[in-house]
Structure formats: C-alpha cells, structure tokens
Image (tube, rainbow, N blue to C red; front, side, top):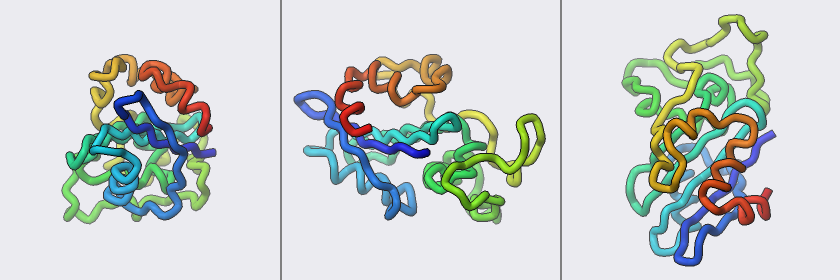
Length: 174
C-alpha cells in the first residue's frame, strides 16, 4: 500500500496535503506538482512510502533542482512510484549507457514485492543498489540528521513528521 503527501513549509508552519501520483510520470512532473502546492516558493517535501518496503523524500526549494533520498533503491526499483525517484543521476549512471529502469523485470503490481525470497539474489539490474541512495542529509537543517534518516524504518514518515513538528498535519491527510 502506498501513501504520498506534500508538506509545504509556510510562515505559519507546515501545511500538508495528500497527493495522487497517478498522473506523475517523471521527477520533473513531481517537482512541478510540489511547486504548485507551495506559496511563495517555500520548501516542499514530498513524502512517499510503500508500507514496509521503502520510503522516499523529495525536497523542492523554490526553483532549485529537487533533492532526493530513497531508503531502499532495490525495493523502490520494483515500484512505479519509486521508479520516478530513481533517476540516472541519483543512481550515478550515464543516461546514454543503455541501462534504464524500464529494463527491470517489474512485477506489474503496485506492491513492489520482490519476485524472489529473501536471501536470493534476484536483482534484474545490477546498477540499482539494494540499499539507500540519494542525499541522506536532505533534512539536516530540519533536525533530522543523516544518521537518524538512515536508521528510520517502520513508521519513517511519521518519525520524520514528528521531528519537523508536523505530525498532526500529516496525520490529517493519512
């Protein structure tokens, strides 16, 4: 099961809204959606989680390029929403080298469950690491250190929202 929300930082604190990602096909689309929700080019965080498998944070500061953190690239690569976040740049590969996520053996479901049992080596694309990728310092200035972000698990988005002082507004859209 997926959950996605936008948290926009305003003068009055954090404002949350749930969001549908059905029409989002690229990171650029996601960034545009986030910017539309933010008055005055405020910081917007896009929080995405697939229950028990992975979570992602996309940070948009005005017109700056989005900053991304994904807790498990391997799990996210098997997800249509995770696929949006796992750009060539984030994965450190050349976009012209012929490897892309479309070549992955996606399971066709929105649950992102792997086609193999735990412990089996079934990664279809060795250029996608199994662990975290991206900017683990994405929330440092909001009080969530790299070490804390890397240690989050079960209710990662709830823990992030709590650290931001936004748990109440996030819960209203859950």
